[in-house]
Image 1: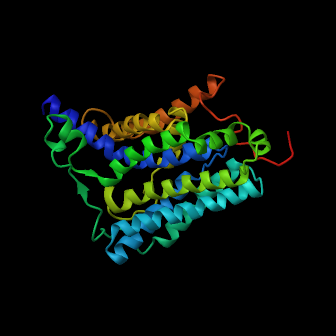
Image 2 (image 1 turned 45 degrees about the vertical axis):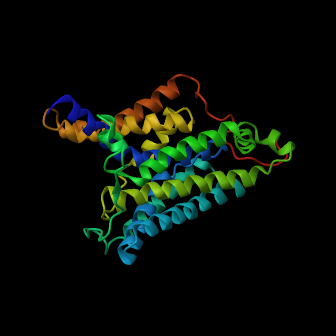
Length: 307
């Protein structure tokens, strides 16, 4: 195999592997920018994966499955928002509980659906004209998911909203100093609710992508720890939507290489690569003594009137 074919394969598959990571990371960035940590990403993703598959298999419409996955993810995030924003419960405990709940519920409901191939997967797309560009065409514009392209555009849009609009200033203010934002008339609770729910919607879509296109079937635990990679990617990207693109591509390439290099290296070692890098990212962030780009009030429940 020549180097061009090898490069095309890596980049093309990195985009495919990285798509659910990108969607999940964009949602987590917005939730954390509002000051709410959601460790329930894995649970929301797996619920999205099951619901998308069940709806797509029952109706024959994979797009409807993705829509339902988004609603299910948003509904699960609403529970987390209620517990952490309204009841001011510990955000880390609530997120972990949501992950365990999601994995358990999806596993229970999905028992009769395992091993059944999806009748009508979400079709891949090839961009006319652009797919003919030498090297770049086959890498970026041939046989990719429409959700991949939507995710890339969404990253740019969310970056613009975050840094170039009044709403983005409000969101960042709530994450940095909710008391100050409240004093200026911002509804801190509403902003946090909306940000957390948005995070759940995007995590649901990430899970739905796995079951209706990437691996069009349902398998218990098919998210395989991707939600935890998303948490690490949020830090890796510095809470910046544009940086999340490169981070998701990097981890997507690691996922692909863990299969591609099995002829030369032990498969057990290779499968650990994405998770080992995720742990490394978290370790470096902890040892550095500072969290680059982290909101000042991240993980801290807000009580009105407290300083």
